[in-house]
Image (cartoon, rainbow, N blue to C red):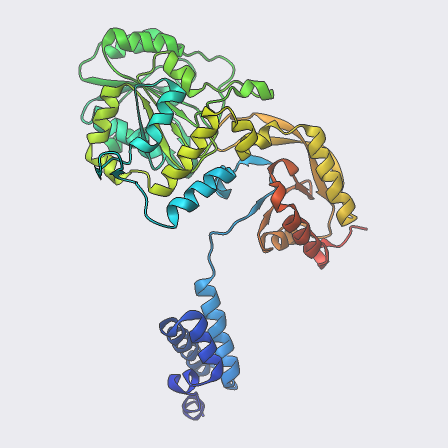
Length: 461
């Protein structure tokens, strides 16, 4: 019985000879289509071994093959609508780029570029020069280097300047951030030796003085607590005190800002976040920070500071392994130019979001209500997020929906095109206008209308 059934399964060549298979080949290519058909036939054979089933006809087999091809070729990295109310949402790609930065990256991507070519001298140049000039003008630093992210920036500094030597850091700063990134592990990987001082809540200048009296101290390091705050019975020396101490000991002082900003966040009623310029002015020899957090650019790790130390970093073999690519450099240079031209708040999306007044957000939420004929608007809070300004929020107006099955409703939103990521609190679906880009509003409304039309989106009695 099974043998008869198995023998009735058409061959791969027979299925490939159909018009439907020809369409699949035209869309997905012959090798991939052939693999999908073979996979389909193998699954059917396996099913027939276990139970007596009717053999699908050729059209159904090819439909299964199409479904396999779709699953293989559908991208998982997709544009998404961030309605969560977290401005720098790490899981959603952190900072959206300015239109000018996107255009700059597109221009470089579509052809050849002067990535490592000096058009004045007519010979090989350096990719390090492209963002360096703007960074030096913005920060007043002597030198600058861009790598692919801040974690690699920190690894490069520690490897190049402190391998097999000691790095002094306070226990108050032995942090772990997202993805299991731990400062002690990075120190170990770099070959540097960790010298912990102070306690988990308090460290004094004398602790640093005692540690620097030891031999083979290569660096004094400070790490920004990017995702938590210390409150209560706490104390730490100021940046100026640490800088003065390092100069006296003739040991470089590294300040890892994590996020790093060129703008005073206090003007938006947020806690003041030390800027890159302030860290350098306070005496840090090297400052490293991210390009895709409060800077608002593409993923990058940026190191600024003393020219002699930057020169050592550039020459280290690890620098090549973690260098920034041409697209990141194009986007970052354009983003930096926004700051240089004093237009960051008007041009860079995260600063547009942060500076948007609550009245405008309330208006947008009300427009969504009128358009959908559902929902309400309530006061809420927007988080800055992204490993910066821990615990700091901005007032906002949330668009709120009461639906019969909120979890399934959120799933419908995630499966929209583009996906809509909202949040759930007290069984209420909440969407924050602050983090929804204006050009995405039409897609947001369409996705909400579709989800509201399902059973999950029906009204609560």
